[in-house]
Image (cartoon, rainbow, N blue to C red; front, side):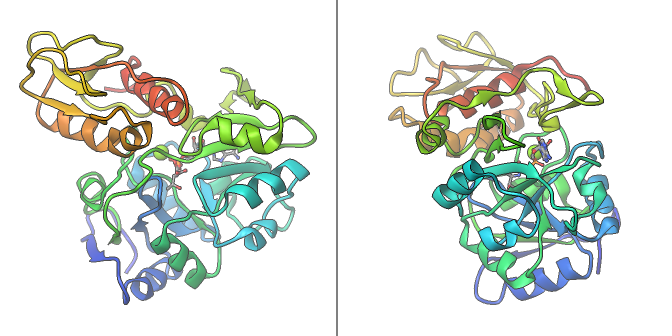
Length: 332
Ligand code: TXA
Ligand code: MG
């Protein structure tokens, strides 16, 4: 029942009888893609090193990149990590929701070393999506889940995206429809007594986190801690790359370019154009970002001209992902 590469991937619709087969599959060491409010995750039993190894293989992810452990609630999270006062405040304010906390792990933390890439910290998240919540409650132990895409591709916001990246490489996809937030969770590190650090802008705006803390977040240094592992190693420059090149802050599409637009005023006529949000709404734009990038990529455009997106609120995460998608490739 567990995934070997070349296996058949089954898709089931989220509904009354969905979680039982998904739970059985996870507990047997299988790989299950499931919806969260941010993006689809590829789940494995966090304590099962072999399942975690298969998960890295299915994604084609370098195994030095640690995974987020997903749990049902704050009580379960407290068994894995040490919460500072700031971490408690953030967890109480935003869990369940699109916030991941990186915390010192407990000595008796059952999550496999491989999933943590040997770090003494752990990334924890309590997702808000009803299917994810039901699944995690029923499994009753932590589930590690990176975004359910091949390493280097944009994150999946629908079951069809997951199938196109991972079909034949994982056991099961639970189809819960499109993800409402559309960009990955915001990652904040609360380590030792230091001021909380923003490791990745995401689905929870920085402004909300800072208001709860009562002071600004520290921004993660572009450099590394310890042995050259980036602070959030998934933040490698070209992590979110589509096939097409991206030209950012474009006023209009040039000849032959596709257009990723934002707002009511679309300059000129373009054969392939998609609008992140015709009404200029950043929440709607985040929800559409990855599916529009995939669709324009699939239309075969060599270059996608991207209109300017404001930086406030979810605009910080949108601009971050666009900059990564536009960065020079580390692989082809
Ligand atoms: O919204 C999300 O966070 C989605 C859904 C499925 O929950 N998950 C997700 O996971 O985006 P992933 O693996 O694609 O990205 C997790 C990021 C990576 O950049 C990883 O390096 C970082 O979290 N990370 C994990 N553990 C860490 C740690 N202990 N210290 C610093 N960064 C860590
Ligand atoms: Mg990812």
